[in-house]
Length: 122
Image 1: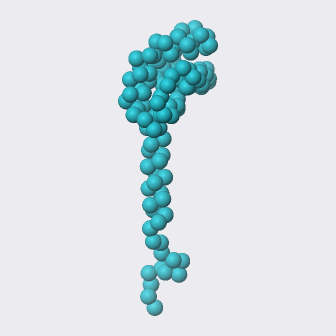
Image 2: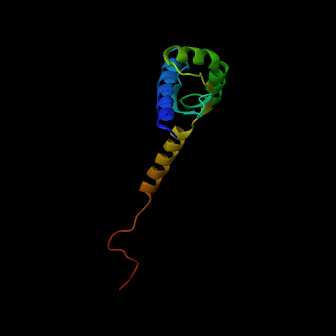
Image 3: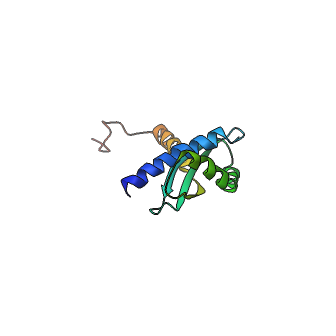
């Protein structure tokens, strides 16, 4: 991926995150923009959304229904040659991370062999 596209992705990530936090109510859920993937021709952008403490399907439905209004607000602040169409998708990496941490905690509680116990009996 080009440096230009990387910079556009980071800029869009920051601005979209600002808009969805400032202008929308999420009823106790924490909604974050985890990544933006813009196509090389800057015609489309996938926006990966993380949702904690709420139903991600409701959040995604609301964001995809409001994508035109969100685009309008974002692109008043971000000037690009073409305006990409935003599509919102669920990013479940935070939930997977919590699951991994919980598994690691369970593994840490399992009994371990001592250093002197090598399985050989004398």
